[in-house]
Length: 294
Image 1 (tube, rainbow, N blue to C red):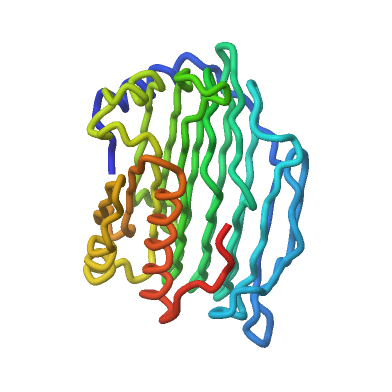
Image 2 (image 1 turned 180 degrees about the horizontal axis):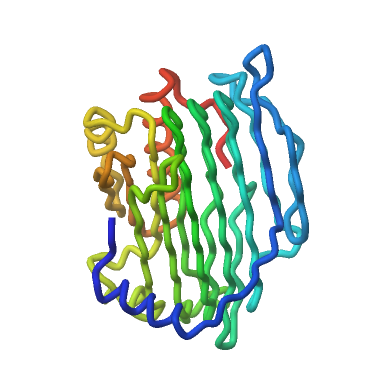
């Protein structure tokens, strides 16, 4: 899946102007499955600004699912920060990784914050990476790069959302949002890639594509597994929400499905994204998630 050529060219021109920067890892998690079938956090490396909460088994519909929350101890993402992370889910293991609250991308003065994440799912693994939305403050420039590696029978669910916000109550916009999603199979073969570049002023004015002045944006990537026509129809048949738009489509090379939503406020966006996630979990496992909503 590729964004409009003009957006891709704009993103490429920015990337070519920035010299390669070594990005330090701040989190490295590996999940495994024990002899009873219960998943657990088998390895963890954590550095500033991330705190890893205690591994939990609190999803009543999936007692074997290992739930971990990542918390920022710095108060958000700041100009010139370069962060990297990796989450690895072993064969047959099931993990849910999320954040307890949204992450603020603070105001900047011409620089950017970069975050790169690698998600690896081994055969028959389930990984749900469900961070709360980014909150983009005025002048912020966020660069996000997610790469997913899928083995046979694995399923990876990734939530990616953002909310523009001016804490002064005005209409100042974020500067820029650059986002890349890459999906590969276990042999490194490229299955799907999307690159997106959004100018803040155009987004808030409603001139950036057909956003219908709905400023809250969410994507839910349902990668691998049995991402078939039945699930696509379930997602497209979700109840309509007043003040919101949503849709879903297949990714190339049977890589999965992408679900997208636009909403007038954060409450509606959260409701739509949760409904899509619940529908996908039910489709794949037979039961909806029983985790407490944020």
